[in-house]
Length: 141
Image 1: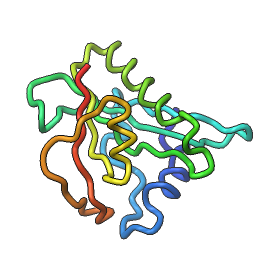
Image 2: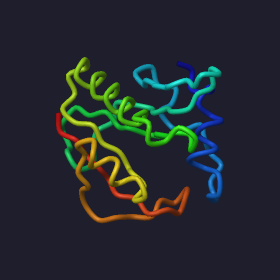
Image 3: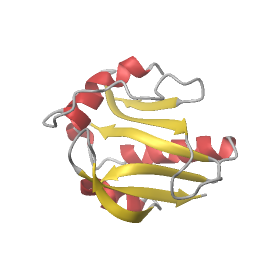
């Protein structure tokens, strides 16, 4: 999937009402980066997640995939789409022989991520781009 197809959803879910308007993220076009998405009945993208090979600051020296820009349209939340995207990323990690998956997760989504087997590690922080509270999360595979 081409990352450009994710821009509208990224803007709506991740950037609207924040001081940041950047939706083309570093690593988006790396050859090993994978963009997963779910389309709605009308063909529009209603859920998406980006997975890139990047070492975790909390598990140095281990092969890792970072989850970035996970977004589910407000009209499609609580339907299991986020869980499907996590499952797809975990399958990708297994295919690549990766040890862990990790992300910088918004605190407002921590309950979802812990329900998917992630644990919060370290101190919380405010991101420079969105100015929202986050925690780093990790899931060992």
